[in-house]
Length: 348
Image 1 (cartoon, rainbow, N blue to C red):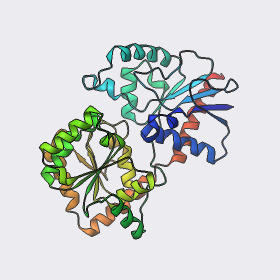
Image 2: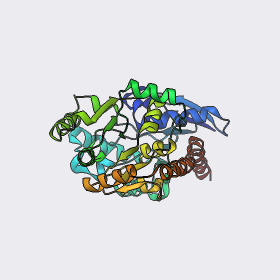
Image 3: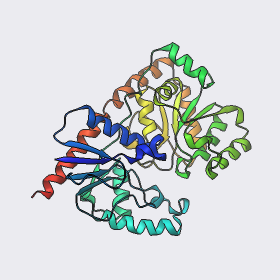
Image 4: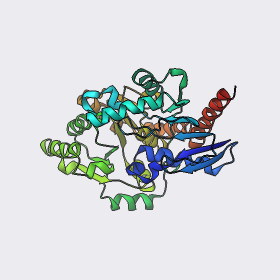
């Protein structure tokens, strides 16, 4: 059997975002081992004619990313449907609504959907024309770059390179509404701590949300407590996770919440929302907060800062061990199982 995987997210603006990371890690895993499939990687809509199954590792609600025709077995990965869960914050516009109409038609012709969490599965089944029986949950994993780093010289170099404070909390992500940056910044103000923010969109003043964040930082008088780095390559980012006291992800919604898992792999505690998919990652070793309450977010931050060195070390070892349950080999193996189940079903 020949499997074609669309790698176009590696050559677009998605390259430095979650969809690009997902595609890159999945492709690398399929290339690194022998599988009972032959893999072909293509860029764009014209997949090779001699393949049996096509996997699209992304799905855009408001752009035409999925072909209407069905001449091959087709699988698509839908990471989340956040704009459908919170439509008031993500207006589609006329063109977007038209594209969404055709995307829904195309979805009716797919054989399976892969998603990142049980939360996403429920939302996809309720918001899109896909029956639950066709939706398969495959949890993501942190890249192998994210791990405990003992090289103090390298950590010092990274700290100096980005002018990091001695004690800080870390945010890694985008500027979209569901990330809840407003309440996160209010919690930082209450806690009186330094915040390092990593993400390409955070330094792009052309984006309205970025300008709004900058304005709020000024109103809260946090300019001296905030460092925005822009996009950072994985090795340096892993070092910053190691240097942080904790990672913050108080989102209103996450399809998975990968920064929490990356932080855990580095042995750094996470303060994250008690809603949507994040509790699926770990029920016991995340400091859960109410995303709607900056006081509660601040309370959990202070709780982590108040841990004794012995308790912090014990927690660090525990979360590293728990993060090992998630690997890209497992992601690839479970994805391959979806391929097999669909091929076997069609072969009946």
